[in-house]
Image (cartoon, rainbow, N blue to C red; front, side, top):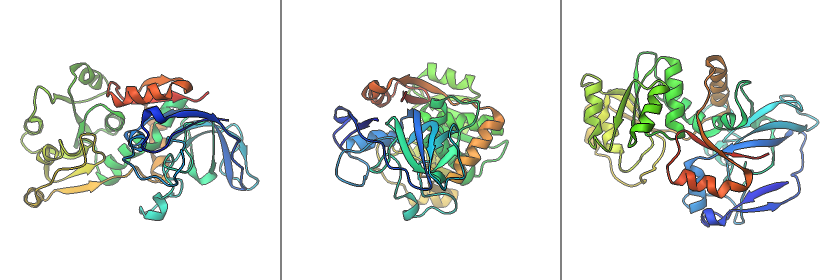
Length: 337
C-alpha cells in the first residue's frame, strides 16, 4: 500500500511517499481502505516538531480518516466487510474520564496514521459513519467534530437559548457553528474576512465580528449580549486572544481552551478569574463515546460538515500549505483513493 511518511520536525518538505506491506491483522482488528483524510492544526505541529511523538523514525501522519472495512479479524463483532467507518482520534479512550494511558496512542503521532491507503485498527477504535456524509465530511468528525462537541456540550454544558462565541472560521469553529445552530444555541463568530463572515451567516451565525475592524472585539461581544457576555467561548487562538476571550464571557461562564494558533505563551491574571467566577477548561478532542454521540446527532440533524477543498493523494504537501496559509473555511481534505 502507499503511505505518506514524515520525520517529526522536518516540515512540509519532509513529507515523502513510499510503498510498504499491509499491516498484520489480529483477532479483533479491522482493515480499512481509507478514502479520505482531513487536516488539523495538530498535524502541522507534528511536521514542525512542536508536538510530542513516539518513536524516532518517519511516521505516518494524520488522525482523521474515513473509509470502508475490507477485512476483519476472526473475533470482530462490531463491524463487517463493506461497512463505512471513521477513525477515533484516541484508539484507547473509549469512554469515561481522560487519562494518560487512554490518550497515549493518539493516531498520527508515531503509531498508526491516516495519510495512507489502508489502516489496521482494533474494532473498538472505529465508529460507524453517518449515512449521508461523504468520506471527507466523515473524516472531519474524528478531531474537529469531536472537539467541538466536547467543548460545546460535554465541557461547556450549553443549552438551547444560550450563547457561544467562536473564534475564526477554521475546522473546529465551523463545526461548532453548525452544531450550535442545530441545537438552538446562539452563535457569535469572528473573522478578519467579511467574505468568510458572510459564509458563516449563511450557516446560521447570529452575529458577526470582524476582528481587524474591531481589534477590541470583546467590547463588541458585550454589546451584542446586553453587557452580560456569552455563556461559553471556544478559545482556539491562544496567546493573542485569551485575554479578550476572558473579557467576553459572562460571570460564571466558561472559556474552553482548544488551541493556540497565535501561540501558547502569555499569562492570565488570576484576579480576572476570581471576580467573574470564570471557569477555564482545556479540551483535548474526546472519547469514542463522544464521537458516537456526535455521529448520532449529525445523522439526526443531517448536518453536512463544511469541507473547503479536497486535494488528491499525491498533493498532500499542497494540502498542508493551503491549511498553513489559513485560506480555508472549514476543513481541508486529502482524497486517499
